[in-house]
Image 1: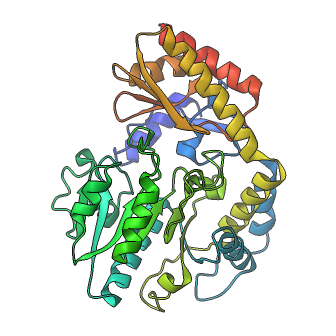
Image 2: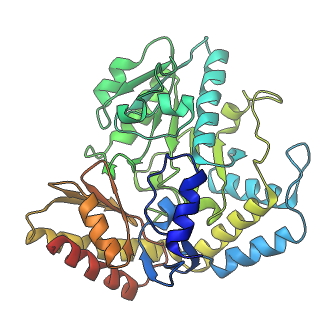
Length: 394
């Protein structure tokens, strides 16, 4: 089938919620995608920060094939070796945490919200969660209620009660919102969907940690987009020297397969007992095998060091362009999550790049967002930058 045929067939039957670009991809290798008409694209989007080792990384493909030939699904009524090994691995990476496995970022953020409420019920009947304006935590009703962007709320009101939204990077606003009902604070260390926003207050996350400790609140970090190496460290909070009580991961964890994980301090996780939460496909052995291969590859191939170095190169090049371009307001980011803030809408630049076979995206209206593979080479980075220069100039 051609691009046009696949697009036509899709839109004939699919619920129209995605606003898909008129491209259909049939193959991917490393940082490149091939469409149904045989055109090759350099991918600086990674399926929204998912394929962080590039497309069809051999280690991930081999892990998937090997596991799929043995066992695909048994449900959480039983145990599997890939699931056991993955929770052991994640626990060891997060100070002995207990782990809940699900299928997506929304699901594990939902689990974190439910955990906070259940924990709060056990600690004085508290239930309220403080979340941030400009945040994004998912599309379920609970995660949508904690998402601080009204454009995602329209048509789904009223939101669920029990969420107080305050400004990001404003510790005084958080302090003012704390009351006898408060159980937890939920925050993204870097706001990805909100425009790659990093707190300008250097100790913001540290002060949140202190505030939660003083008031016996849970501090919960949503690292769905920025975790698993995206920032040049395995977890984004490592840059800030602050450890949360609860952390959520997804996207890059499965190398392209759907998987999410909620990690919580054992004494906090203990509030969830058999029957209080669950999911049919969580801990799927094929997805767990893929996640183990991702974590192995990050370690064996020194992926974090590459992400930090190439990410720094990309940001320096973009800042050089900004010096001679009236279109760029700011370049910000960490590692391989980069936001180029423009004076005008970013979508025309995205479209101009796409015409030159580079894939990236726009977020928050005027922010050009780059989410390249963490193992991108310097030559591939230079290839992408040449296209971005031409697109900005045009």
